Image 1 (tube, rainbow, N blue to C red):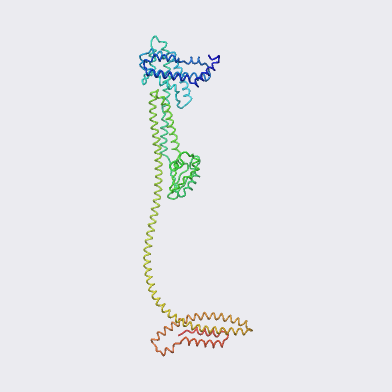
Image 2 (cartoon, rainbow, N blue to C red):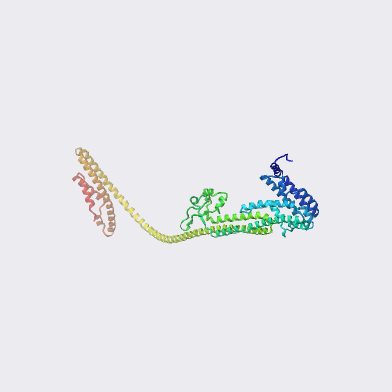
Length: 589
């Protein structure tokens, strides 16, 4: 009694009871456990108890539920479908729990357990509602739609009459139990219900078979495309020396697109034999040192911003991998296809428990999926090997270039060594010549020492003569003093005498220089005279020697008298000049 409430209110109250307290689900779960445990423990002796449990369950058909929970709103509809689904789970579990001996030998018990107008109709209504709801979803979706749990358990537990793999679950036992003249009318009803069960089973099986046909085709095609992309992949290794790596990375950073890490223009690296050209359009691949530094957590923009951080600090070279995006796209499509096939297998795996053909196809797909995963791993390993081979080729190329440079340097060093050897030989020859010249110089030095001793003695003689000349100079100084006294006394003629004095001084300096020159000349004459005297001493007598030799003292006396006579005749110094001129102009014979 609901106190005169409207039917929709009663349905809402029942729905609240079903959703919140789940009393009905608890009841169905209890009945299912009792039936499964009873049949397992007591086997055929549990038939009477199972019959009582079926009667107390009091399964309701769609019409009975509509009468008990009337209403056209969505809540009432969901309530009725939920109750039908829960009842169907109990009834299908009860059908699966009934031993095969009871189904074969006790048809009367089977008719009481699964009445043509109660349990079988309730199962028919429930599976029909679940199947229609599922087919409505499959029509609206291209992808695989997983079966509802109730429908999945139904096709697992209730098999068509012709089923051989699960004979104990075959609905042929129900047909046999209701077959006979006394149950002709009921048999027709049961046959229609079983036919509908078979139709649902077959349609569901065909759906899965159809969906599984070609399910692995996309994966296989994508992997073939991946292999083609792998074979035709254009990869370039940018080798950046440690010195200047920061500047090169900044230049590469300017050439890269921040969002896609694709070169906007050609990248030129190195010069001459070590030159590299990486064409525009290639993408910086997250491999090697780039992956070790940034992993996969950093997005393209962040990696572009932090690219200069790759500059090595240990002095090693930096290698950047550039490649086309075809392989990456094919790899993404292949991974996506493998994931889709795996999702299909996970969905189909539940359906394969009910459909043997689907189970075979599922196993084939599982094998293909496993092979596809292995193939993907193999392709990725090939990609890594390809990258490693490319890096090795670049390293070998760089090593060959450096080896060639080293050989050129070695050849240049050998040429320099040969030149040094030739220079060493020439130096040895020059050393021998220098030693020879040193010996000659030593001999010359000995000769010069002897000449020096001779010159020292000559110098001593010249010093003596110099002292005599100093006396003459003193006399000239006396003359100069007298002339200055005359100049002072003749103040009236001061101007004239000053001019004369300046002229005389200039003339005196000139003649003094000439006198020094003559002195040097006289020294040479003295040497010559001395040599002549040495030679004549051997040939001539001492008397002739006394006539030809004049002493320096006599010569000085003559010169003094000559100066005095000239000074008396020419007071302005012109006589002295003429005297010196006559003296120095007369060369000894």
